[in-house]
Image (cartoon, rainbow, N blue to C red; front, side, top):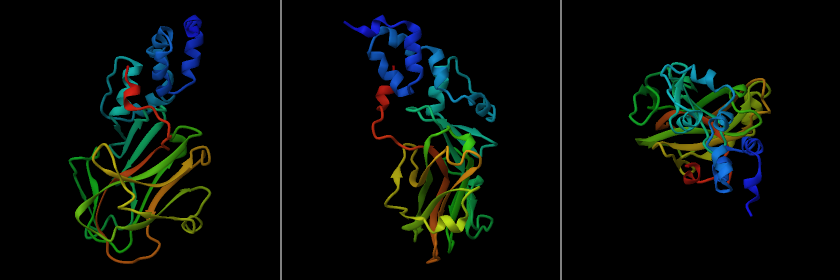
Amino acid sequence: MNYFEKLPEGCIFEIISRTTPADAVRSTILSTGFKFVAKSDEIWGRFLPSDYQKIIDRSKLPLICNTKKELFFSLCDSPILLDSGRLSFFIDKHSGKKCFMIAARKLEILGSVDIHSWQWKKHHDSRFSKVAYLHAVLQLDIRGKIGTKMLSPKTDYAAYLVFKLGRRSCELEYANSIIRFVKYESDTETEEQANTLKLVTSAKLRGDGWMEVELGHFNSKEGSDGPVEARLFEMKRSSIKSGLIVEGIEFRPKIIKCRASEADLKF
């Protein structure tokens, strides 16, 4: 006997609404009642961020969707540009948490105003109008800040440098990275605890054709009243570096080992 079939629809709704999008999709195999509720527009409205409309209103391009479920998956699969194209927003399909990428134009890049050090160009693989091309610098220092209130609350996040390597890249094997809550930690304090990255060998290929390397992780609850900064830099000036192409710094939830497959998230 399938006892799930005997549960009232309201009870099923409360159960599913307290789970994740991935769990909601998996629940459809339990009973026809679960399948009916899991497909309802009200459920997918619960999985959207509470401030999703305010976020969408910051985009210049209209987002036309007929249902909340359609809107949810659209924001998962097709990031939207905000704030005149200097910020990208999407939703993590498995958890429903908010994700942002700060465009290179909005990052603090040491020497970026010097055309002999950095150049700004279009890139056919980028969601942004221009990316940063490293021509030649002695010291690498890239920072990206985001307000923790913009992120999903009480969530473990990681920050990633999203980049590519040019044909003539050199001296980019190693770098340092740190995450700091700007209001509570100084540069000096956090630099002493910086991680050492193998920038090239540690990087992973993304589905959009770019590469990424994790700069660090944090919980959004810790700095709930101020910005968090992700930084890639060098503690020692060694030699001239070139060939780095920066698209941005992305903030998204830490990957959970036991995640639903892409196939699990399709009805």
